[in-house]
Length: 239
Image (cartoon, rainbow, N blue to C red; front, side):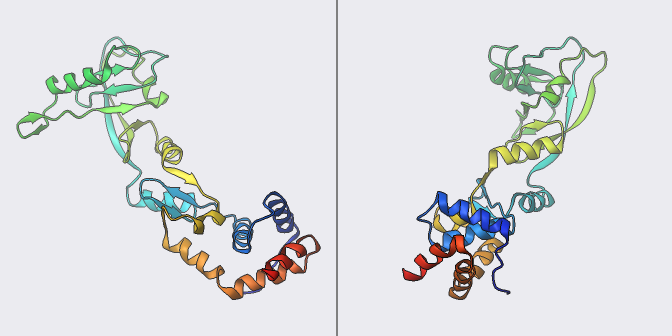
């Protein structure tokens, strides 16, 4: 690989970082530089306790494996709506379309369990007993479907989160929920210092490439040629 090239914009980033973190060591500074140079934003995937190189690559890979969302079908029953514009969470019977809202029933969770256990349209059995399967959704777009009065029952394709089981109106909504609840950004320079999580092989290989003594020396040399960074490079050489 070629020696490090510190552009004007990267120099500005380094100066700002070192002024804010004057005690940052050489490896930390190098990894910060690399994260800016390659626009790297590692993420912790909480469910697997693993740090990956970036959000987009992880999501694309998990989608290909069917590990984020699945298609599901909901049924919307006829008659007067039993939820309203203030409803934030609903429990849905997948067999009949019966729905209970968090603000329209005193105990919707107990109610849905009781309903699916007796629902005449529930033909699923496990060890001779009716399966108590139901859907949960906090997606306003899904809840809207149950606010309208209907003369005929309607079936609608929605999307189920593989992790939480919650129902969403679109794949994009499932992915946004996944990002919010399963991913956490971790700065690249913090990745080697933690020992609670695994590091995905591609990211680990990238880091190992640059923690070699020769690469660290190249980085110090590149910094020593820039007036605003020279003092930091000198301090590392003296350590």
